[in-house]
Length: 368
Image (tube, rainbow, N blue to C red):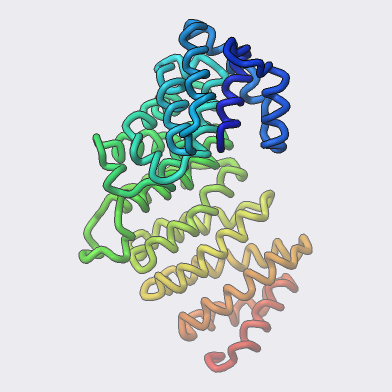
């Protein structure tokens, strides 16, 4: 982003600068050459929206002062455009279509440390957008919050209690009916929790309830009541990331997570759900091994159901992944599943009997 960014604002404001022979057509041509991949469509109506808010004389003066300032650099340029042009919209940012996209586009090109320096001015428009009734605004707000989280530190987020305010707004969206909003809100909420708190496994009092526990309980509750397969895919996809973050601290929630995964393993129409469930179960073997064996029978029966269905459907990927997981589970449980596996040898499904033979062949030491 250099001086051409000011050309962009001027062009989409549909201005003809009185002190210059630079016409609108020439400005657009200049920007196109400098930024061939830029999307002009989202900013095309910028000038029309600006005309609703500012007088022409003031806008001309502002653009001219920016355009002919030889000392401009990335930080000061973006600051001036964001702080002097976009943000003064106030509540109207929800009503005017194009400035919302201009706000996000400018934020996406603003890097450390400018976002942190002006957080108190950048956060309110994001909060206005996320509280809008339109999903399109919520999506833009979540993208902006992701940019904020990536470019600031914990101390900056705590300024004026923005951490709690932002967290409260984002948490409302991890059960939002829109799939697009949900797909952005879950990773955004996780990134925010990682920014606000230390990883649960690093806490001195591991068993003491903390803010991440409260987050995980809400997350599991929303996931448990979900009925649509595409939304379940998102919940279980990011559950893998949660387990990796918690590590051994996940034991506190092991029963709830295993119950959820067993239920999600029944989903057949979206194969990614079962694959993600298996990834989560493998992580539980690593981080929840002291207690995972207490749930081993329920997990095994769920895997048997998946094995039978995937073999009948010819889904070799899920079949092989599930078979390998059963082998790992049996090895960890040190023979306690052998009796149940022996009973499965007479199961009327070639996939299940093949899985049992594979497990005993790979690890015959604990075979009865």
